[in-house]
Image 1 (tube, rainbow, N blue to C red):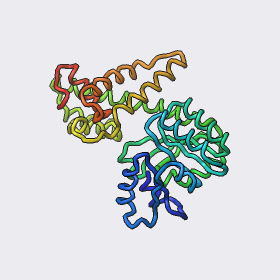
Image 2 (image 1 turned 60 degrees about the horizontal axis):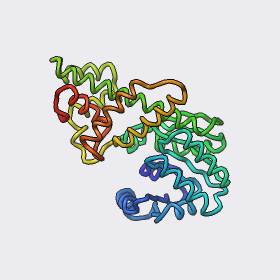
Image 3 (image 1 turned 30 degrees about the vertical axis):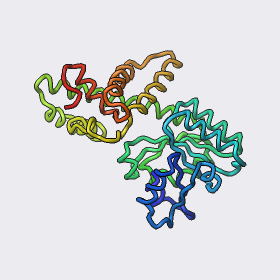
Image 4 (image 1 turned 90 degrees about the vertical axis):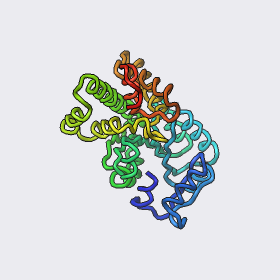
Length: 292
């Protein structure tokens, strides 16, 4: 996302980069802007926000985002600043963030995104925008055509609607991976063969289904040094989905099954576990090795 903001966004001042791990920000700058002409490293979030008009945030969990909002909102006057949160958090957290920032006289837009890291790198994310129309108008120039390929807009609706869609949308991804994992496992055990199943998937379900099918067949789900979609984050999203379902008086049986398999991925691979590791968990409970 930073790469595409730097390369495509209508910026008239250097892009400010901040990370809780400062070395990561320095490493990113070295890759994207080795001459240090278009970017500036902020040593902490307070310095980053002070110098910015529009602040994009993307943190791993709800607590981290809440702590950041509390820290920033109590530091100085935020009048005129616009915060755009791309984190995947519970809708209640989004509502809390909107309240914190607006009480500090700032604007707030929720902008979670759909897409794997490769899509983010290519500027092909789907941006989900919710919040006041005037604030969304300020964010649009940085979304479609810059960090994303398309926008889904809930203009004038509560900011929490964006993360509500994000959490529900992520259950579709979980269910897709669960279906692929079970399909490839039975294809191997029944004698159909994974290559034959993959041909069907390529024709019938091009796009994410085919991509995840390829990752499973290649063994990428257990060979990566760093996960594309970390198992801890996937389980966090599943937990949010369960909470939403309970509050709505229903259950999400498919998500329960997938989350059970994610727990086995955590046990087997720890922090290196990836959401696609569900395939390994299904294989193992079916009498095969976790690794294909």
